[in-house]
Length: 235
Image (cartoon, rainbow, N blue to C red; front, side, top):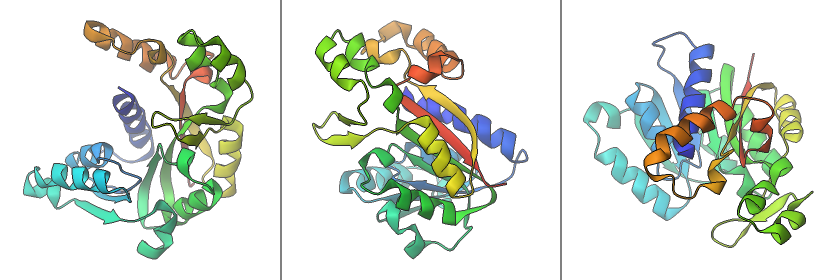
């Protein structure tokens, strides 16, 4: 569901930013299994995905290989670290740069952001998905974990599903970082406002998705989402 919400939000920003029918040069840093990259390639865009994890690379390559030749030809998959964009790509190479669910696992996120800004073309769109540090107590509280909720107030790290430590970000800090790479904040959304409390929506999934989409763009609900989808633009 998170992927679908972010996809809808991303499409909204692309439609607002670029002429209808324009074929965009897209970079997806930390593409994982390639869902967003493949979706954009199917829409006619030229997509380059960067991934360092072997499982993600294998899944993305298998998914691309199963597509018709016209879509496969628009997909390029690069094995590498998102911090090495300067090694692989020239400045201003991409109209749209995605970095979804990556910054929380990077020790030096400012350096990664600077690299993303470097490859973003004039007029380009940068799309980030980060964990929301201003709402860290919400998920444990919705589970009834009151000790975890109390401990989460003011925290900027958390335990991910694998048991590792990850980083959370605050909107004002991300906004400042975007301004610092000349891609100032254009729009932001909340992702997973309600669904942290609904592990299995079952037949109600469509209703939950509709409520999440509305909440993700509405104050004050979006401010307490588990994730933030933040978009900057190079004007």
